[in-house]
Length: 178
Image (cartoon, rainbow, N blue to C red; front, side):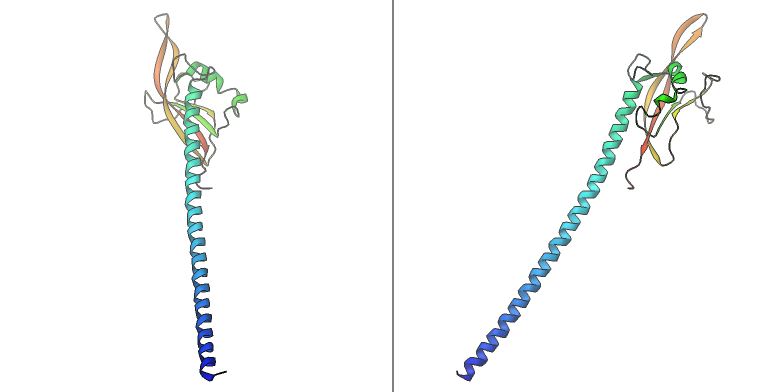
């Protein structure tokens, strides 16, 4: 064999090995690049899912607010209104604590405004402003809506419906931090 042919084969062989090594490095780089892109996509998607779950739970809680206000146990007859006479009796029954699967239910009279919170009981009703039906858990989040509160009142020997403004608050678990 000619010496120049042999050295040419060796040079070509080394060049081919170098080309193969470069191609392997490029393939490894592309592989890791796609892994990083995939991980970024997964984390972005997961954060979107967490936000979606939170929004879904919030929507569920707001719909539950409307459903509770319109439930026959508490409704005053008109849409989105709560009968305070029924509510003061209802809050004494502990059987409803797990009925709605929520972490807390508080209804507050907004008018007349008072800095003082007076919990309603059978003894002090109607001279109170807060109905704690289900005591909220510490790490829960409130979703609230305004409702009409009504009660039967008497003036000059006549019974009539007295309407007041109230706020119903539903407490649920906070899933944003999980």
